[in-house]
Image (tube, rainbow, N blue to C red):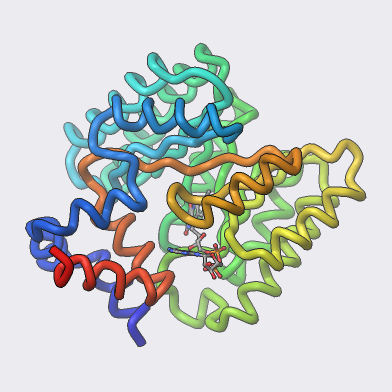
Length: 296
Ligand code: FDA
């Protein structure tokens, strides 16, 4: 019951204003977000690199409805690539680059970001947003891949269409996630059992293909399945990915075991939607959030 409510709150402007105005929120947000400034993100990337972890940086923002904001989001990534070093990449939401305004605006912005990534010797993976944006996102990714074949994309196992999308993306860099948006039963599996089974099927497809699987989950059982499938893959190449601040000991354990482990590091002032999705994923996070008001 709680999770759909929190997912709805993630999209509510009124709740956004309320939550972002609460004084203790910042401290709780810091558990999931590296900070508001580029310098915070670069410091975090350096600390993670020192611990043997790769990073993918996400400049927070989504659902942009004006051109100037979309351009500012693009510029934030251009600045990011001028400061980033090591085993790093960027994660990009096309809605932050203007997808809802105009496909060609988002495409032009994404192209400039990809060109900057290429100059820096790094890559870009496109995040997947709610189901209404999947076709437009995959169309743009296809266009980007014509010039930058290394561009990756997130595919959500919970969507019924995703097995078909995974087949179409054969040979690509694909980040497999469960899916963070509340979706109707007409387009998405609803129970965790169904979603986990769909994720395992997705893993089998990716590991049997010749693309580069990015296994983005904190679920121990699915990580084990991925490792087993990777062991019978020649070459083994694949990586594991988790979100900043979630299951950190497991991130370190996988890196120490020799896996390539990448941490998704969000930063920036527009943390509200991302933060609410993390609360919705786990009721215990909400308790942690509420407790911060009592223990002030
Ligand atoms: P699940 O939710 O079953 O969690 C498994 C275990 O992980 C839990 O039991 C708990 O221990 C821990 N855990 C998970 N979430 C937690 C949380 N919020 N707080 C504390 N512990 C938690 N989604 C999307 O729709 N589009 C996208 O582009 C992306 N991109 C993306 C990139 C990367 C690198 C990751 C890791 C995830 C995403 N996601 C995403 C989010 C994804 O869809 C999903 O919502 C979360 O990863 C949680 O699902 P799990 O696979 O971890 O399983």
